[in-house]
Image (cartoon, rainbow, N blue to C red; front, top):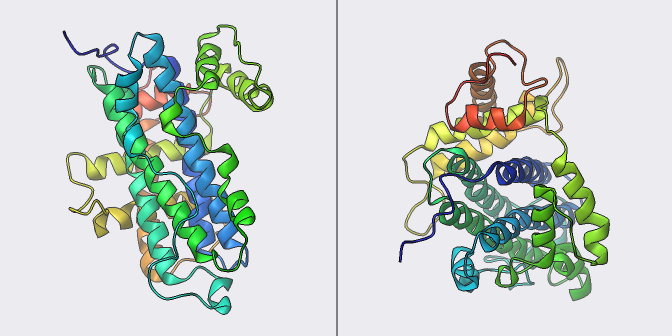
Length: 346
């Protein structure tokens, strides 16, 4: 029996969901990176919040893709295999952070061993986003379900591991109840249960079909999200710059290995990915505006180079200098990752 391929490429309504998910995740990863540099007494809590948010955002996209495959006739067992449900990691409270303990004065800012883990994890996640989007839009990517879901599952598992590491930093001084709240365990949705009824309703909302779930949380959060998803999305400066950032990473790592045998990003990959996240902060500054946080010389060079590369890539996407004003996000997505020019009438 031939393997189900679910069409030549990800359908447009899922492409739009993938774009919105990516924009939110990049914003959340940037927040984590900022708190790794800023001297802020609450950095553990804020990083844990944003790590959980990023994992949940990706999880909703994974669930909706799972609901789509189910709607197209995929078997529950096949979908579970694509979701890598049997190997998933959850953001539950783990053991102490490997290495020495941290004195209280160490925790006024993120200690170097923790920052190293944060940067490695963010690089692991962020290099998967352009690969996922590229696979989602390129015509002829008939295996897009397995490719996209594999990348997203990897990213979720890495974020779960990061959440555990962050929790372990404060495990000795915070109660289990507080750690559970900071890790947002109450809103965690294991992949073993996907697609959930909310995923099916979310998909129906994207398709313009009536939703059926009476779940209170879905009513409060999910329906408003679906309404946003139905609205035409025109690219603003931030969205255009995020797409340019991902295009830079896509160009940089196309056809090259991202990680060593232990599945840790190579130093060049990590520096480029973190440099792009920092470069996005620089690229979005208004003239004469100071950045929110200051970088060491080494990081600053990477960020400045990344910001320059983003501006160049953006100029190639929008040769008329419009920076995306009034352009549909799917056109930008295709122009970025499918290498197709924008329609001239826009």
